Image 1: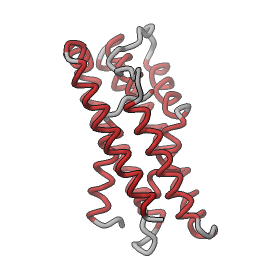
Image 2: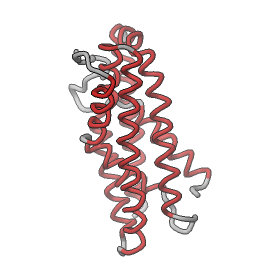
Image 3: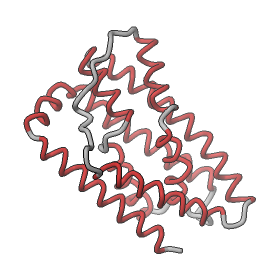
Length: 208
């Protein structure tokens, strides 16, 4: 099992990612505003199913990779640093758009909403990179089963995203209206998250 400091550091990073604008958040907010809380929650379930699929693939793939390929851990660490730097730049780059500028989505039935939530995750390359490049940074060889550690970390990410997603789905309209009046709040969040991700990327690179 990951130790306590590892879980705390991982929790801080995935919390930051959960509140950072991305395709999943934009779709969740847009669906919730366009069709109501229930549709938002259904789309959230679809998104979570996509993360579960990625987690299962990553858990077994990472376990096999670390067991058979020399220097695999270093390669994953460098890939994770590059991924974090990309996310940091995406957060602070000029012209960044607030996810609360929701798209006008057409009405859809529960099955279609669920499927679109699933597709939003599966077609988002950042979701795949999260499990293939970032999550392995918190797996510590020698601290128990690599597979068990990966599953624990993956389930932590999914649980946090579900909890945050429920808040977003139930308050999307009010949040959108409030942040439309205070764009500086979203800008401050983007810079805070970008700085945090950049600092963690630098830490990974310094471990070489």
